[in-house]
Length: 499
Image (cartoon, rainbow, N blue to C red; front, side, top):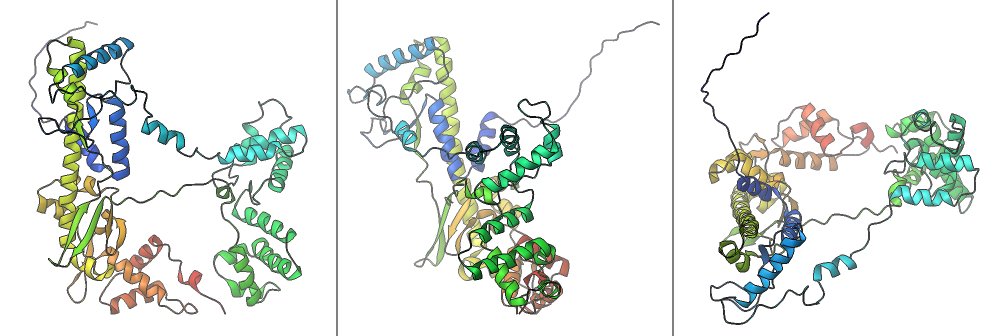
């Protein structure tokens, strides 16, 4: 066997798309909603020595506003840190302006730091569900093995407070743990005591039905009088013996196969609505995320048109520090420091340009949208027109991906309410009258049809399609099913009210 090596040269042609870092950053900034943009700016202010806020103060000769000395780098070495401090002092003394020396940073002058004060006053994160349950369990009197096994089970409780893990699986993962003679019987005993001792009732149930049963048992024990106890006991019968029929709203069948008449069944079902489907969430406060509209749209009666404005007052004005801009060009500064400062100046410039481009692009897109959706703004959701992103992109001379990033996650406040900007973009159909209607407008009409039905004889999906056809909207029955499920509207059987 012989080996042969050949050396040759080959010329290949091809096209490769490489995005510059500045372009990548611009796309990232464009996609950020207002709260995320504010967080991004805060991080950049902390990490970039050349980026600073524009605060109202005496203007300099070049028209810029002065600011405190910029923050020192957070990630440099101690030697570079000291070098920049020395350079900052030297540049402060030689500052070219009105002759006044720059005021020292509030942090260096011993003044309170606003950001640190805000962090100190912010509420602490709440205790996790598992920590609260473990703390409750530690106060329960039980055998040592039961306490150990119960603590182990609590590690598998989900955020709803339910135990969806199989006990056999927990047993297999716990055999090697010390402190207990692990067995299925031990886990069963521990789980039973967990369900009895922990609050709120329903915690550590293995499914929704068991959780409701535990909650009902607690309500029966705490009933105020015989009538109250009887109503809760009826609800317990529904969950224990007729749960599947209850879920599918087969109330006459329940009445036929139980001692309960329809009146008692309705009363018992009303009691069930007072229970929780996720008892664990009663212990953990989940803060609601407020909606911050990126764009405000209002009607201008003098010009009979809708006007868009960006809600960017929460976005701080930024500038490149004149001190560090000058330092980056000064040959008297050693090369390593000058390179570091120049990199930060360049990064700050890119960020400011990206924020300005985001503002311009978003406003152009919204202005195009409100021109196209004038009827929706005038008359409501039934008049929402089909508006593919590609049409807006073509009008503005942008790539469709740019339009998509511009509207991603952005909220818009209009006279018709506050909603996601992307909701205004959708396909649609042509009505019998030749008018264009978006799918969102069709959904609004579908909801209106359902809300106006007789609940004792709810409309089937085919009947809903026929009702929409009478309004000039022709869609298939399967499309009705699709939209109904997307909007969380139950089937006709589940919507029916039995009297």
